[in-house]
Length: 158
Image (cartoon, rainbow, N blue to C red):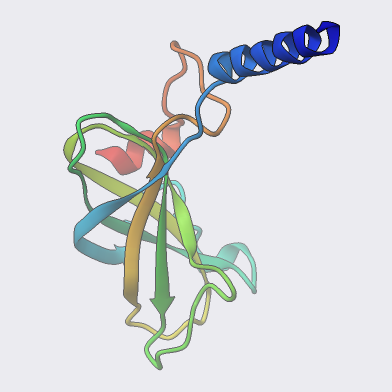
């Protein structure tokens, strides 16, 4: 009887702990549309002119719309794409994640990401298999309420 009581109490404690634990963050795929890939304007602070280094990089902006058809925000959303040069070769070797667009509210939202492309990559650049994926709950450390966008993020958002 004493063992049965102890086993029941431990089982109850375990179930109670499981109920109090935060739920898993489920992945959510979002629709991406109206995509463009263009060189950053010369006035952009991230444009990185070729004279800065011999093996430098050029700045490109990937812009588009993302649609969250759900009723809740999607958190920590990443954008994935294959960026190809004029000959169809991948520009970002062994990498399809091109950046993070943060949290996406329900509905349609615009986004913009900067890409650093090695100098000498033959133009025009194209893209394939663009998709966005986020989570039902935050999975990364959150910025504080009073934190603002970085100057580079502010310039791209305009």
